[in-house]
Image (cartoon, rainbow, N blue to C red; front, side, top):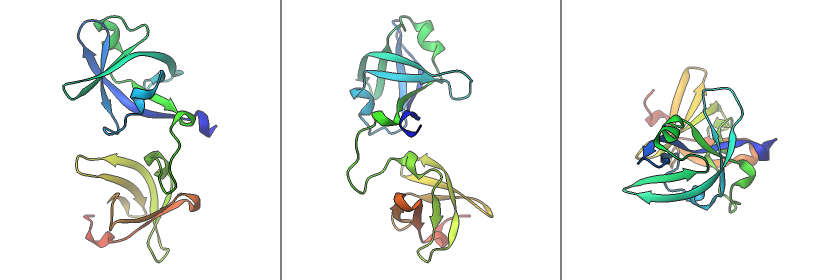
Length: 173
């Protein structure tokens, strides 16, 4: 079900201190969603098994990092055992969007078309670079990374299952 779909917010990069705090890498560094939650689902992206829903005991910023304490994670060894895990939220727990806004995860699977309607390919992934976001599009020739900003992305039409892209001849192939 779409509302129960888990969306990753952060990855555990290590332990902080000896008391079980986790050091996190946010997938969207500007998001404050994690700070508003009471629970997260913890999962290892490359392993089988069910995600575990765990209570958040505390969350704080420290020297540019986000530190989190989960219920039951009481020492450094327990924190290190979670390294590589993702902290996820159910889609139905995400905040409502304003008209015209979208979540980046909603772009995956959409068609990329030119303003003339020609199919460029399908979006496989959204990438976060320090300077910009990009979408990786699977084309008949291979892959193409398109910056998610004008003039490359002209319009996002979620209701029609596509984005309109332009200025592709300016991109390296």
